[in-house]
Amino acid sequence: MVLQFGSRVTVARLSIGRDDERELVDEKGVFKMRSIFCAAALAAVTLGASQVASAGFVLQSSARNVSVSVAGAVVDTESNTAYGPWFGSASSNAASYAALATQGSGLSNAEMTFVGAAQLDASAAAALAARSTASVVFLADSNESIRWIANLWREAIGSSNSASIAMSVTDIASGSVLLGFTGPSIGSGSFGVVAGRSYRVDIAAIANATGPTHSLADYNVGFFSSVPTPGAIALLGLAGLTARRRR
Image 1 (tube, rainbow, N blue to C red):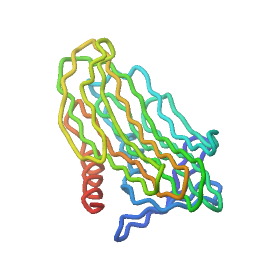
Image 2: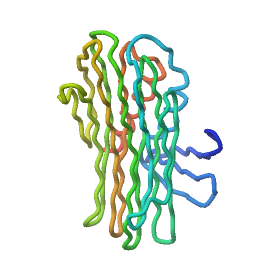
Image 3: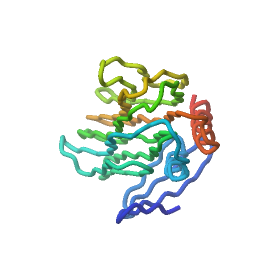
Image 4: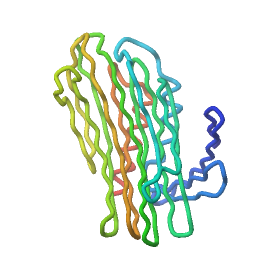
């Protein structure tokens, strides 16, 4: 599978086996990493492209970003401030470590979907960090109930190494948090929005390491102002299936 966004090409070889593993190779052909997080990550781009516009989210701003840092300095990053579908990846590798951050997301008037991860693997001491984040502001065009579903996962092996994953929805005017959710967890529900008010969706997957490690934080999240499309249901259903297998 080859996905091209502007001048950047990402090649993904999907190999689903007993552990739902996925092998990623970047456009330079030198980076390889196995990941146990949901193989549906790349499908988010296709899902976003197929959205049907309708009343619901009036998008006001978007900041989606992936980055990898080594010894406190960012060595690879991609970001996007537009709407619609987007896939970004950042990576770095050396003899003793491999780092990867990815995100596939889609923003439309009816649905917002996010799938991504931050992952580090190191066999020796190294100051590494991977981040996959999104911050989206929308205006509610009516009083309604927004439905959400999320599968958040994190794990970190080795002392002084960490992984975190969290998402939230905040009423910008009042500062009140309508939804706060951290992993590892699977959940779904709804929250009410008021016409004419702005709300911010934040998602952050962060992995840090200073020594030998396997650190991973990943997410599959959807927000729906109408009945979810079959594509969204399939994507998030697969995410839940993967999480159950992982346990």
